[in-house]
Image (cartoon, rainbow, N blue to C red; front, side):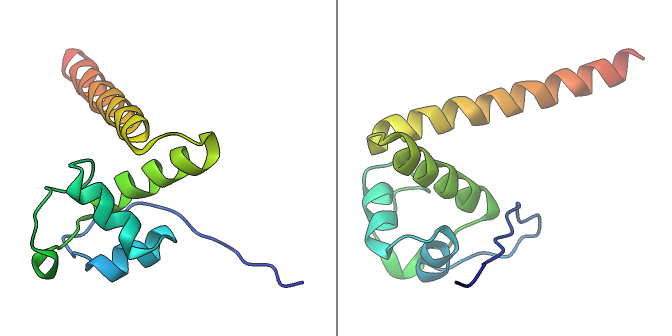
Length: 104
């Protein structure tokens, strides 16, 4: 039996991913990504597949949504809502840390 080491992290540069690259990075089919885009749950919902380019934020969001759907059998809309809440929580924590640094 082969053991695979899986690394995870966030991209921090300005490089973008294609639809196929995003799907591969998330270990999902391209149809999974397309369905979430067309539903307005991921990226900007653009109807032009050829022009879709994805940022590190899109990658992180898609991975998080997929894990929620897979691990908790969540509906796509619920996974997107939970992801929205996680992202907002992270933004608020960052603002709080920044405010605490200013006060010291």
